Image 1 (cartoon, rainbow, N blue to C red):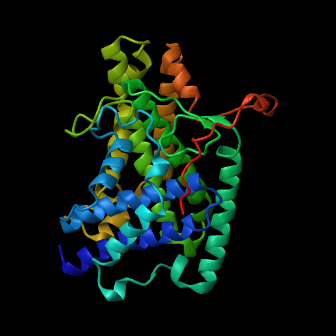
Image 2 (image 1 turned 90 degrees about the horizontal axis):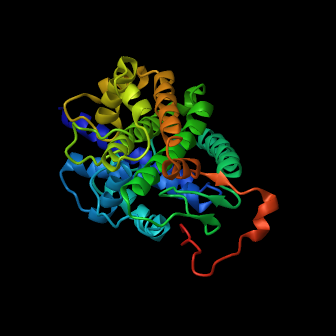
Length: 343
């Protein structure tokens, strides 16, 4: 691989971090700051792997847990992501990448940030998108089992069993995929937002694959942990037949392989053997409709499997359940559970 191509890949990850950090400063709520920060976490870990210098070990552990890698069995027991995913931990990741690239690459170079007029309209639109998502998906009293969504008015399950951990990851990835879709759907028709579209598409792909990995263990990855299908069979809970049918479906297998290939080469990691132009072609060439179909296939199967046992169903439906206003008077503010501010 040519040196300039290596530098281009590093720059791509760094510019993405600059983009997401700019969005973080426009986010209407700390939850969305953490959604955006997770992209910076993933890309920093990819950056570290490229330069063969893994220095942020705790951040890597957080990244691995959400991406269905091996974890400490007690990780989810009362864990609050807001204690760690905050500006004091994320800004140093951006600075770390900045320190590993040439001076010429350190300034914003993508149109969404480098062009003053484009940046102004881009950030204004992004702020409106995030405000709408916040109003629809985050605001108010809710019951949620989501790794990154903690507001102080949310009710969370505190458990360390495998089923709870599985749905913490699944619900988190489902929320993050939906969040990224909001950006992609608004950006992809605007030529000036080509880079932001690519970064949003990468996020959708990442979390779509993680939804699938939370259902079926990725047997090709030695670090993967059991998914819902494996847990149901092991614990003899519910009826996994609908998941078996999906797993044996050729159309699902074809979609999974297609999306997984792009995920492994340009999303979760950067393929050192492929040129940046080839990686862009691969990313741009993957039909977003295929990615959405994979989301729908997986979530429909999980929905049906969850209905076969109340313990599974309870965790599925509390991915983000809004408490009706006429019942909110029953919810009391509990001292000590306020989340840490992102900034």
